[in-house]
Length: 379
View 1 (cartoon, rainbow, N blue to C red):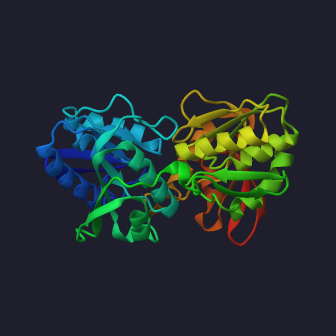
View 2 (cartoon, rainbow, N blue to C red; view 1 turned 45 degrees about the vertical axis):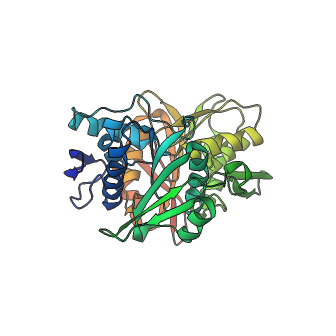
């Protein structure tokens, strides 16, 4: 992790960014600085305003605005642990009693909503429509992002959802958009759910906008799917199987189709992914009772599992690499039974065969194509 000090209108914060040792990667960016600056200007004249922070990443906005007791909602479960770490570094700042997610969103009405603009166009469209319902009639939405990461057609997405009032000049390669409440709502938007047909099961798999590969089966998962049947054949009835970083749940759905007698758990850092997996499982296997976990990896006490299925993310907040996979490999090794196996697919260029050998005594390649490799690993 890297640690640095953020100076902002309310003081200074010592913030750490977990998962990297690169000193150039901080726990905030210029978009956070813009939001804090504009929010303090707004709140100076309206100190009793009800404030909501949406998709803070490491706690800069939440802690920076703690004097105004903001509510906080985030798709990523990572915020909970990052906020706890950074709150410990800043004991004079208070933290919210609860970090909401899209599994349990806040239901209050807000004067001011601060939003980190996501990269995904559809997720931005979803957030703006949700914010319209959460804003008071005269409420203000401040949204900011790094210019190079703003989604395609972002200007059109804002114009189609909210009343854009001002667009800032570029500041340190970031931009802020100030808007009023618009008329667009989620209940009339056709983009909430999108998906594809999973041919082998004759099932349609759908997902919400923040979920990876929601409109088509990604090619890595496609390569891995045929290997689930042999991987599950030797399992006893009732064994526990984990779809880790489950996304829309397609790996777990295939596992249930092959072995409806297993005890299935779906886990993802994204609350919209957990909602999507729950939705798809309820449609395809209404008689099953899987577990669904909103977690950044495998939480303590969740294991052991007989099989863990994994297609690990390889990017996080603009950082591409194997740091997420390494953490998940370590957690998987700690949460497998003595006879358990990890079945995973990954990008060939990331060299996962060497990474897996750091955590597992047995590593076997099951399949490969020019871009992806499927491995089985165990104790």
